[in-house]
Amino acid sequence: MANWTAKERLEAVFQFEQPDITPLSSWLCNDAIVKHFAGEELTVENACTAFVKGLRGCINFTYQKDDKGNLVLPEYERDEIDEFGYTRHYVRWTSWVVGYPYQNGDTQAIARIVREEIERFRSWDGQDAADIIARADGWQSLLGDDTLLSGRTFVITGPGINYRDGLENFSYLLADYPELAIEWSQARHERWLRMIELVEDAELYPVVLVAGDLAYRSGTLVSPRWLKESGWFRRLAEIVDAYHQKGIKVIYHSDGDLRRILPELVGTGIDGLNPIEVAAGMELSALRQQYPRLVLGGGVPYDILLNGSREEVKQATLHCLKSASPGYIAGSSTDEFSDDLPLENFLEMFDTLNNWRP
Image 1 (cartoon, rainbow, N blue to C red):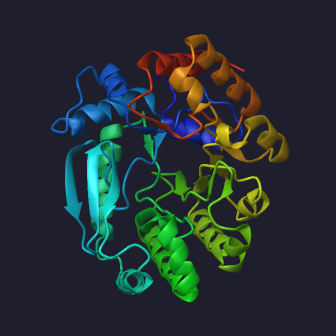
Image 2 (cartoon, rainbow, N blue to C red; image 1 turned 90 degrees about the vertical axis):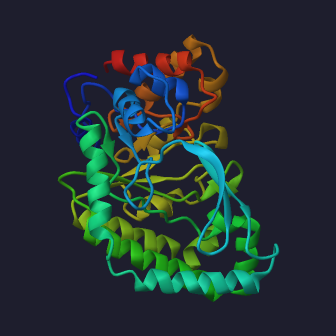
């Protein structure tokens, strides 16, 4: 990379100034890309070094970490049962729940787990904050000036427990225990606020990405009315304000078609939005016209990155640069580079970013 540090590039973007090179942000889950920039095959055993080298070579800003301050690295294939009885299946770059401690639709059992988790949220008093700081700062030290972590932890503020229990079971819980679902959201929210106060540092991490998918291609996962009436937008605004009080800029991440709730989402005070899912009807040039002082990230159509020619990748990348700069962070429209992305197409995007000047 050129002369600027990753931190300097991100800070310039949020001042709507053009850095030396438009920063690239992503979740990197591609062995070929890592091998190309690390100069060695990536294995589970060498991931702590090889993945860091690969990340440093091509990604300026990443939130690829858990809420304990650790980078998310490739895993052996296995099943693990967590403290609540959920079975999670791990495969290389990803994991998902394959077994539940209840029958599908058993909201009484879900409610018991939710109440236990609420108590855990409420009892957290920062006892492991020092460990989180040490882990995140250790990774940032290895990444050096080339790649900036998104804060020390990973705040997720989606509609609810649909990430773990699935949207169907979450919907059942909303129907049978509407107040409990909101109580869970509030307890989790208060824990995040305590976490931000205890562990975040604007001098080291001036930009964070807050995640929580709100939509898919045809609209929001839950109704805009529920998001408003449940206090979801209010809670996000409080999260954003907590970061702002520390001098930290906030990017909000959600896939899908957000157009019905964009005014409310931007109204929470977020400084940026990604990944601008083109396949869901989101479009960088329209967003830039509507929100001239909102940092935009992503937007390079993932279907072109996966299946397009190198020239098509180049033109799609140039379109995003010209449509959203300054105030633009490059990336795909899904905010990830998965293992099926051809290396040559990634390199075309990477070279286009490095060679482009406004």
